[in-house]
Length: 341
Image (cartoon, rainbow, N blue to C red; front, side, top):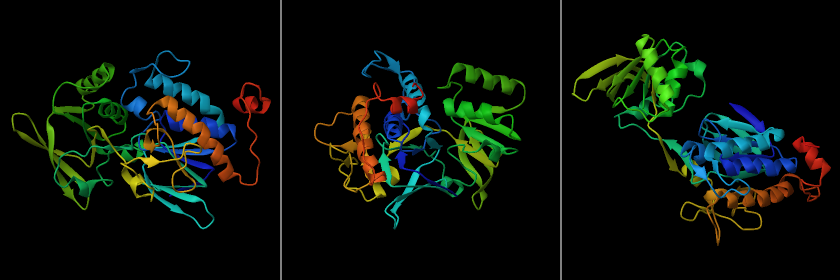
């Protein structure tokens, strides 16, 4: 278990969460970000990385990935710490008034301010329809790879036909004892160069590829020993494996946020429009996850919300200091923070 102390803990590393880092950084507030995905960008990079966006001020056309890259460059001076592949699992108020945010990976972040920038909710992996798979989860069945080295020397079974399945097939092939990729057809929804690399490894005898479905898992006490693969012609094969990585896509759920004691309305967090604070002092909500009269679900709106949230967050984190409003165009101290002075 790792424990961190910071000014602000942000749930969600999409565009709104990233811009919040910038606005907080201008006020000398440090941030940690938690996201269930394995990289920043949220929906922009997960659902439409190459889809053009036309309503970002000053950028007539930008893709989801390009916008994320620009935001990462913008927040670089502020040294935010990211916790990818982790989902917020618990939140409690400490005796000193700060919050303790826990994740499913054992991380604890202590901060006076919590900012929920989770879009429509958490991206939750889709569980394959295999009887009894729950008993193996987080022991020998994993929906994300947090530490590659933990899989070194393993007999790995990967299922899926998208970028995640192909990327991890290529990344884990050099360190696995054996690796088999299973997909229900010979067509993929992944980048063609990744598919070509996978087939090259198969031709070289370094990995196996089978057109089939994973029908059953075999083992005891949550430790996988083998899996039954079923081909389209109903023939079955028992494959020895000790690790199963199913990549069947993601679904969006509010998840543990719903258990944080917030005054939810239709799975959204009502906020005021001066501070974008929830009904619970110290917990803010910005972006698509919040609700207020006149709300527009636009990235532009989320940027505005992040700016006002940061002003109030300063008062929570620095109650004995005076906030002096400054413009980046004229403030030498802000320009120094940005590295442009």
